[in-house]
Length: 254
Image (cartoon, rainbow, N blue to C red):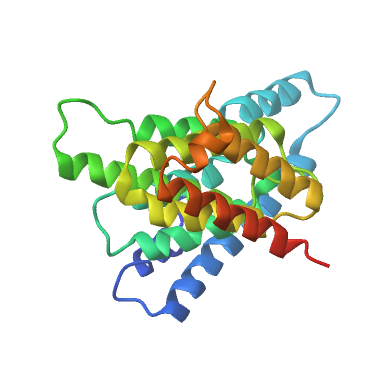
């Protein structure tokens, strides 16, 4: 999208903007994407002659190549917006993270049907991959970036297939990456404990919450390890288990 106003909205996501200005910029980005999608749909509907083989071939070509790679049928504009938002979260510029986090959550929430969660998580993995040659500040920035990207997915509830069901494959991928961060990087644990709690508090049904809790415990507790032994092995393990259990029970208390 070669729209100067649209691209300019991203410039309002920095530290200099107030909370209300950040919300307005995010809203402008979402509304522009919606308007562009509507206009594109009208053009396709009015321009395709079903009796013209060449026109139909061109339409198929555009559908295949003028779309993004984070979901089937995703527009290039939406793909660009998501990748730019994620890049902002992954960057070491902390002044833009709050604004880009808001945009990521809003866009994922509004366009959830067009986003492939598994593809999105794999993209985040690729963009935040660390190597042995990286210095600690680089690793730290990528780890925090990955945590914020995954946290945006949680806040947008993209992993929920419906009000009462979760995407089983999506939850497996999401929980696996969150727990890996929790296990490998001590400085993420406090924040990730809050993310785990939010996942449980956003469950639409008790069964949905139980599935999320089950996946969390399955990834947190090492294979072939006695559950009780693991829980009481360290105070952090016990604290996390009690926090998650309380969040789940509180959500569905009578």
